[in-house]
Image (tube, rainbow, N blue to C red; front, side, top):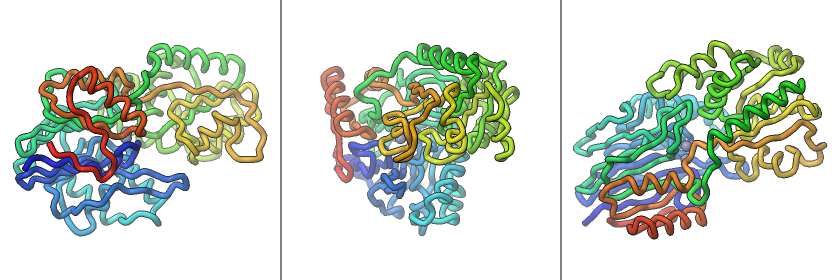
Length: 422
Ligand SMILES: [Zn+2]
Ligand SMILES: [Zn+2]
């Protein structure tokens, strides 16, 4: 009997990534175990798995759609979880934050999170570990600091799982590169499997020009951004290009920034992040928030990236009617989020007046576009099979078609619960 690969989550959807590998020799491994959130913010879990039969769990990065459900596996058993040290630090903060917001819906509490952390085995990017006879190799994924792909040799087959990947260099992380890597099976994400992002340098130029023009006009700039990753990427860009500006950062992005500064080996341009921490100002308390808004020419970077709560709501309400000020959205805005509603309709709540502040959207994605994903597939030597996950179904099928046409390997787009035998 060969290797069985079962998709427990992220099959034809973005979110709640979870893939189970079962070798014919009995070796069983879990790759990621994340949560998604439905329209009313209730967590949605991957299909269930018996933790007692697992040899280990490998976690690619700290986003909740990859790690958020891992503590569920620690209710009754203790198995090794493998991830980078920085992923472990971020995951702890993000899972604790999720427990504060959605604890009622979660099938675990603090003791399970503590057990998970106590059983975590940390690895460096580019290193290998052996767990109970199974070799796991962790390869840079270029997605967020600490993120990895993982390559597993199981029962004579090598499986490369990308997690979330990006192929371009950013200030935070170097892009992923798979030249020289060999694998029989590749499980690849497809969030942007059917489009290419605009050139990052051009996006940055337009972003900087727009920020400058708002400031010169006497307005304030609000940049709602995810606390982990996007906030620090924007701060590092501002430190490089506008070091003279009055820049503030608020909310959980402060703690994420401190963590990145304590793990410099994971950061591509640590010099710029250190500079940002030296010259820009963290915001403490509402008194300071009020004071910043009375100034002119302030740039505020704060969660939440899609305007779902966080200090960004405090600021946006106060900038709402100010024609000189502007809101800069710098990430994908998911359907049914306040950020998407603002982009589409100019409002956040039904029945309120439209925003008078200027509104911009910039594509600072941390996922590879179609060309980047194709490049990664083509770099891998010895591929026999590609499995496309972590993309909406039309997108995943489009990427699968392209891989089949251009690379000539067998490709599957499994739904959740589907098992593929190789
Ligand atoms: Zn991610
Ligand atoms: Zn993801």
